[in-house]
Length: 256
Image (cartoon, rainbow, N blue to C red):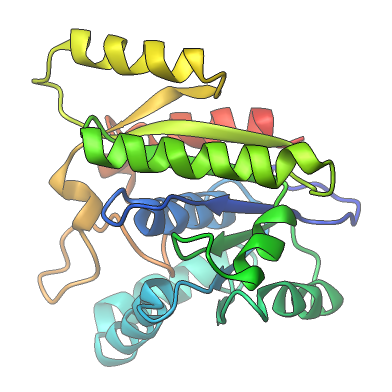
């Protein structure tokens, strides 16, 4: 196990962006599950992306599938034994006003390394500003789409100028992450975008996440290898080429 033995304050991490469809919810689940079930860390997820609450809904869907399917029920039991009776990480349905209180309650009950927050994409409410200011790290997924990129950059500039630069936040780092990268796209396009990002002095992660149908693979009646789940890590055969493992290692190197 790669977990740390001594109890310490967990790190608050948010995959956060202003534009829907950038992949923040999927990335939250993938990274949380990979760190919890593969890397030996103990994580929790607080879903305050009202009204969708996509991660809370996914957890409910995952549990129902396991309850009604002997194959997944067996997988869950085998994993429980293999991970020395380690339970599934908690997914708390919340909102921006209560998220930090929910996190404090979790910390009282257990020893967590990371608490991930799935946040709504607008800064126009006081609860969200307070929650973002309490994050240790923010990772903003971007794609080579002008609207997505401009929206995300505007959002991060606002976070940096109005929250981080006040000196009244816990934020230690804000990072951009190329997501949904189409291998057929010309690299020149990314070079143009990256020059803009560099001018704005926003750090960009080295890892990129390719666009792939595998990211939508959940538990199903066909029992195909799954990728996105709150109860299981992504299948090893699907992790290859996804860069999920590379991303997790890069993030762990930054989250200190």
